[in-house]
Image 1: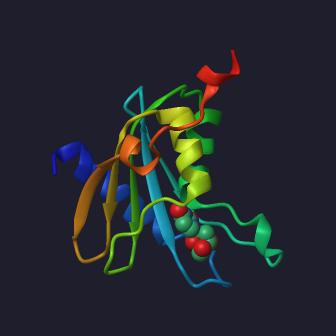
Image 2: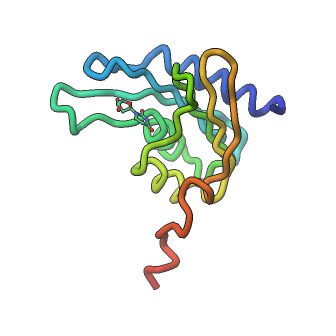
Length: 132
Ligand code: THU
């Protein structure tokens, strides 16, 4: 891992501590690096009406967009699972929308990590180029 990747993992690990996940007890942290170089963090936020839950990845991206970022360079996702947890299907679509084919850094709390590209996680993606 390079320094910028470690920094993103560290930010996502810190965000995970803030997860509001009383129903699933599955805490997720995410961090995205905007084109400006700024980092935005997110955690999952659940609701008693379960379907209203928002994943950590989307919280981080919404924060960046609302702060004026247009695109993001990379994203990290941290979960306390032995097998590294990848983003869910909905988040893959949103990551593709705002990040494109970026590296996705997966990590757990034991320091196990892996980098996988979005085009591997979401091959043949649907996006705005089909809306012409
Ligand atoms: N979750 C995320 O935050 N990101 C994902 O990509 C997978 C799922 C959250 C949603 C819910 O709060 C909990 O994990 C269990 O599904």
